[in-house]
Image 1 (cartoon, helix red, strand yellow):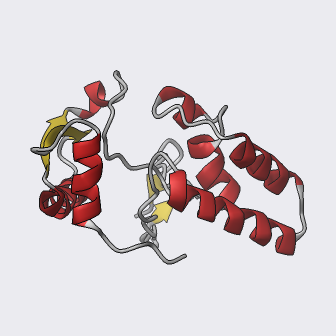
Image 2: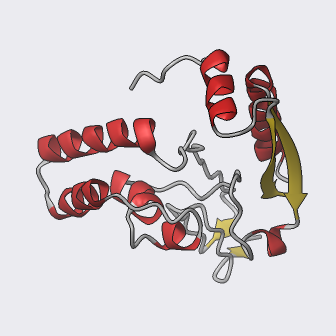
Length: 178
């Protein structure tokens, strides 16, 4: 889906209308020691400057990050294998990530996600997920910017290893052959 171009003048007007004619400073929270997320935060900070929006980056140790809901945050999650597992937990009113973080609720999105997970008709799923994208781009609480591809390479000496579709590394049954 095409995403509209930045409009700093319109953003400044909206800030002024909201009572911030001289701009606004907002904190952006992210887990510490994740260079990819840090680069995304810096990019967001730079993109926001022309709109007179100052973004303060705050990095929090991973074990403390999810303890509190934060109004503006960047985070990551393991790759998911289907649109349902990518979207339901993030955007459905009852999705676990949504309930604990941004608390987004849209009855049409809930219907779309419920219907899409219950049909096996690929054309109908495509139609439903396309409509979901329209809603997410225009009103969603936050985007999924990208999903990192994951590849696993294993030596011929490794025994008992099984790759996870969720990028979880489980080494309980792994041994090395001589």
